[in-house]
Length: 440
Image (cartoon, rainbow, N blue to C red; front, side, top):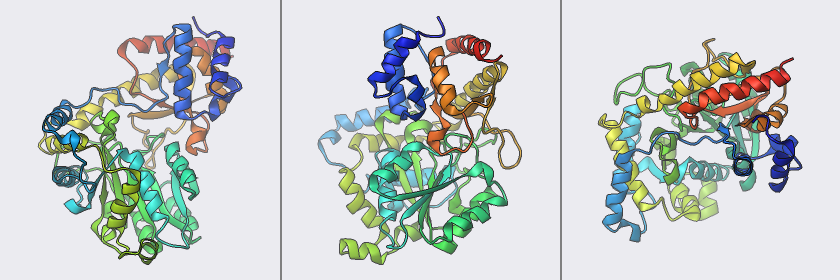
């Protein structure tokens, strides 16, 4: 029965260090997940989960079988090569060529424990390239934990909401930030988490050109590679490819995660694909700090990554290599598989609009509607994101506040991955009740 008992919900929030549900807007993603799970346990009512960006499709069996084979062969007893096993470097390079259209040499492919570790290690490394540059520029909205990583490391953060600076406006805004001389790197995802907006080739050209002009390292997060389902992509070695800043600058790295593409989030596998000009470049500040030649690639791997982990789990590297190979050969059609998220998002958004909600980030740079995909954003009337989650939590619907992503617009981020076929009708019923209670 909706809404849920207020006292019970508030008591559960308090158990997680929040005074009551009024503080949910400030909760971290994982904190919110814990609150919701405990409410479900206490009430017996299942939530419609849209708070955690977790795959909702089965993990690719090709990866599982390759890991199993590697473990049976005794790989679990051996430390993996920290630079990556030959198979993952070769097929990682081929994968980038097949689906991004870029030539990244095998020696510039480095496996990481998910893109989370990749971002942490890259931000750490870039912060040591120059004594004058101490800031990472984020294109907001963004994945909140990446800013949290900078806070943990002690790196200064700057940001702007890209929705206000699309197309021709982007260049002036980037110039404004870069001219300070403090920007060491900039980080963005494309498609964007959480808005699902997609940067255009024109915008990527601007980013690449200005990155060269101001010597700024670009970190391109391709967690949702080729998941702009408005475009017909996904045929290996055939255009159209994933748009990439790598076509416009060599001063960049690309983070490519297996979590969403192959529904392999639990195994924490990803690669960093470095443009060779950057990978092999030597930086005097690194040379002075570590008493070596200052090469970016070697210091990233043997100094920073090594301090975080003795490499990616051995069997996971074999799993990644097998999935990359299968995708390159057309045996895994990951773009068609993940298109399921677009179907789910379209249905969820339709239900929301029917019940008085609206899409917050609704337009892309070219005026087209933002595509349907893994994430979407939604709001209600002129409510803040905090006001919305503070009320929606009592109706068995969970999502995170856009405020935590750096968004300048008010609302919530929803993820379409976890909803089941039997939950659409229930979501409709709950949102209809919510709108009945607050729509007047």
